Length: 608
Image (cartoon, rainbow, N blue to C red; front, side):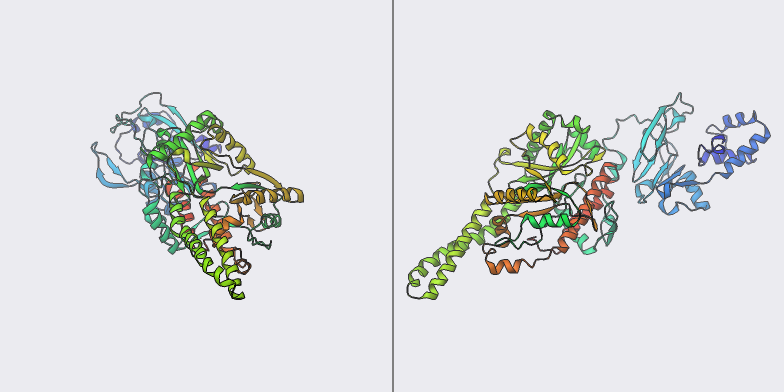
């Protein structure tokens, strides 16, 4: 009371306070739960003090809303629709919570777990129901750790979300229901148990997702339906899926002779956006992979709520497990964990888990199957048909000049078909054991309590180099270079590097702004732009795409929708990881991950 008078505290009433108030006003109440001791203490005070205490208790509001609506404090809790409002019903809920009408084995009312259904934006701090340890659930936290029953007195520091507890000096009142359960503590927290079942309503219908980088990202209902089909049938355990990487746009179309893409256009794009420096990274011939590695299964259970599913996971950019063999995945993750031990990665990160964005080579089995069924069949049949036709055309060419022209065109097409076959063969090789795989990490995305979006791309490369050095058989360092966009020599050196790399069979390179998140003229710029080599694009566009008439037609491709998708998916990916490290409910993380997958169903030219 004196602290509030001095402006040093706020206070909300509890059910026992209201009971005391009734007694001070002369009403009959049951003299239980310490009220006898309180009355005995008040009897020693003056009548004026007792009147002041009664007036103080009567003036207490049911709940407080702080920090612009971000924080709500009430004795027993506060539903979203009740926050900031006043009524007898709301006051009763703040004081007593809600019961189911049932009683437990101790004869006490069973309380309705309102926090399990809470979907509000505000964080709610409450108590009333004593528990052994503070418990987070859906942006609510119960900090009643039963001090009166010999437990602890707990405080929450806001906005840090730090817990401070001190043990009770004694058991002031013997509880009817034991405060400390005799059984061993459960494997999962209340939030993790709640997260075992995701709510369909959280992902279906037309949705609007607000992120730090972009507001009101729209997820159309039809996209959500398509994503739900993929997620429910093919995806890994959603508790692993804390991030999906964004799509990536190619450069603007090049006018260089015989080329569809060239680094000069990527440099021009970033320079136009006011980005002074970029980082060029080798684009690997593999599939995008997200890798989560924990120090042991205990950490996987404690931090991600995953039970008996190993120390981590490796999944594709659509959330599917990369490995059909659990044994091969276990070996793969175990090798990365051992590399982390040797590189002192855990100590450096001050974390028992981390998440990587990487490229896994060769192309996944699913991608290889696609190559065999579609691309390879086209190239092989064309190759055979052209060579069969050439034999007959050679005989007839001497008799007719027009047939000679046809023979020359056919010979050119046969050469292109052969180049097509050679190109796709570079991306596939059999995987018999772990030694046949290569992982090329390029982003250290997150570890306990932090994301690394505030670090530049060179930092990511140099930090991950320690991991690569510790396990060179499996983990491959990504070649990269920093490019000054106002220095012509710096740009030309990067172009020469790209040319040599692609002419020797490499796929190309990825150009990124030096800072992980870079603001341009119209908001966040593209997180990355890919520039693929001539022969790799032969796989994408077909054997004869380099013929002048085909190149002219392909140069009319539009990039607007692809780039819009990349920016929205990037914002969602950043948001999902930031929510995860803040230890928000899985539904909040999954909302963004699901959003990326839903946007991936947009009808965009898959060759881009």
